[in-house]
Length: 499
Image (cartoon, rainbow, N blue to C red):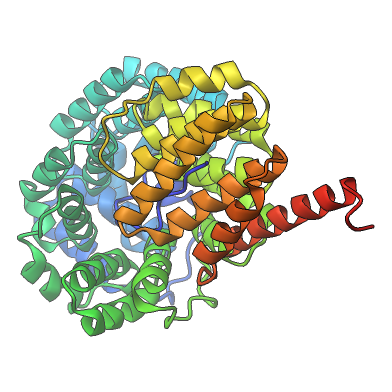
């Protein structure tokens, strides 16, 4: 059966977008001076006035662009224009200068082609200006998406050596190392950066990295003080979501709930997705997020539509989520699950999986979903090859899911006894692990195959599927049960039992 994760283990790791998409674009008009100045921008102004460095100038200008207050960043702008170490990508955003080789993050080009064009663009820029830390990070992102992970790591290392205190570089680098299953390094680079101690964005990233490692951050007390400081709501939202996650994981649901509600103020799409996940999986749907709609909210939209049984909407939002974060294993898993198993679009699922597996070559869940998609398309030999490439020594639920997919493949090949044995073993393992929801799903898939094959075991398989899913309220399970009932009705009509 296909597999879905992301609802049981979400961490608020940083999003990773290109620099242009992260800070937006400048306007060629003078901003109105009456615009309010956030605490975050005030802090950036103070950092610039104290240090006068290129990186504090870049932080100030980026914040001023977001708040449409470039009138407060005149000296910093001039410093960026005149400083020979200014990265061209940053300069291009500040003065709307383009070398005619940059590709817009929202381009309609396919993911692979867009990445190759971005690589060409970055290499041209870096040939002229090799000290551009931001361009090195953007290049690393493209290499990561295409699976050139060694090249990506060298780019990240170059960026960190050039700009070890830049917030954008540090967050992107930590995201890269988490992507590469090295969360210890992700946490280390954040812990050793002096700016982390007073920057809510870096503190949020450090807490998330520590959680991925499986330990409690040593900076929680500092983060708690920063969370109550006078930064803007927008700057504190991810930190509050990270702190809330830590509190709830430690059993302090009330503290976590309060933090999540505070995180709603100024929420971005990443913090909103974390709020939604924590609320649904840990708190029982007590936080209303319906009126919060930040840009790029594709993950939230995909999950909301999923739980409401709106498969076309969920698939459309999932595709946008994947296009935004094409290196993300969770985005690829969710998108392929909905496309192949619920929306009836296994061909599109294959396209997603072939890209997602480049950056996550050893991800067993992505491989499992690839095999499932092949089975749906009756490409059984290819499915067999994929399943054979997944190690069978895993002692977790992913391994049991793969076993269920082996059962599906065996049924489709006509080996009913083998298929039944695989499914039965998967159900038993799910039950032993206490995952009754997955056991019910596996039993439903087995019943579907028994009915499809018109076996005498079909009635008992159906009864068990109904028994194991009777308390399951999820819409995807309801959809598979409805599919089962339809197949049974077709069978009865075929046998002239009903008309």
